[in-house]
Length: 250
Image 1 (cartoon, helix red, strand yellow):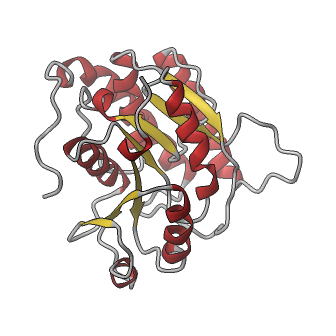
Image 2 (cartoon, rainbow, N blue to C red; image 1 turned 30 degrees about the vertical axis):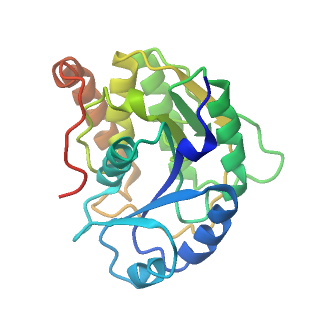
């Protein structure tokens, strides 16, 4: 049976998103009733802007990384009794108007992970993806598919829907941008059902950086490969215990 739409949480990890947070929350409110924001230690006025909106907020005292925000989202959704959680970014590269597409996919009730893909449909206009990001995504997606026997077209899109009961079986502890490598390895080990749906590919700020030396494409490739290899080795040990950690955020 498909979940009632009131049992779906919309969650957004943010870090220094003062330029876009109010527009995103305004538009998200059209399509989602319950909204959670993970403020990953923002040092701009993002916290003050969030206080103006009726959304749940978890704030990290310091920047802990995208993966840590994702872990907290999945734990909170399960803790608060939601059947599904939809995640999206706050940099306006994900369109709130596409949320209903994820809801419809959820209502089909034939997947545990519904993953947005920016590459399922060939673009008819000029491709605005930064070349190095497109290349790294393509290489790593191919390697993830080969290693895990998946059939993904986009291993890194953060626009996703997760069945919370399935996420409860995972033991995720990678805090950085390499979080998807551990996530896909554990999802494959648990034989979770994955469905991709197309989402628009939008890049609004070509100057956005990864930080921590990861703006170098070769450094990102090394990190992703190392994390994928470690996740494949460690998955059997980590997943012996099927329960999620109790803490939401330290």
